[in-house]
Image (cartoon, rainbow, N blue to C red; front, side, top):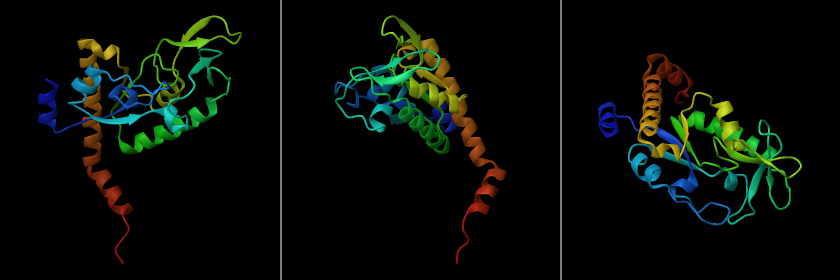
Length: 200
C-alpha cells in the first residue's frame, strides 16, 4: 500500500535514523545493530538521514560505554567508567542538529531503543547514589524532539508491529506531502526568488 502511495504522490519521505540500525559500525564496541525491518522494509520507502550522535560529538569507535545518571526528568550523560560529563556537548550537538534537520526538511525519525543518547522510552537512568535504576529518555532524542515537537518519531523495536509501522508511515508520508505542498506554494516561491542575488 505504501509503495502505491509513494508512486501516486511522487513522495519519498526523508527520515532521520540512528546510524547503527542501518549496519554502520558506530557502536561503543565497534559493532552495529542493523534492523532488517527498518533497513529493509522501511528503507524501500524512505530516504534515510543517518546520525550517530555519540560519534558526532567526538567519541571514538570503539569507546567507553556511556549512561544516564541522576534524575530521569533531567538526567546527565556520563562516561560509565570515569564519570566524565558529556551532557553539555550532547545537548549543544542535538540543538544544532535539530536546526540542520529542519532546514533539510525532515519528515520523521527512527531512534535506537534503550540507548542513553537515542532511546525514546525505558532508558535506564542510574540514581545519584549509584544504586537503583529508573527509566527515562536518551539525551539526544529528548533534546532533538524538544526542538522538533511535531516530528513523527519511533523506536526500531516498536516498528516490528505492523499496525504501529503503518501508523508511523502514515504520519511520515503526511509530513512529506505537507512539506512538498509548502515548497510549491506561490508565496514561498516568490519569497525565495526575492532572496536570490540579482545577476551583475
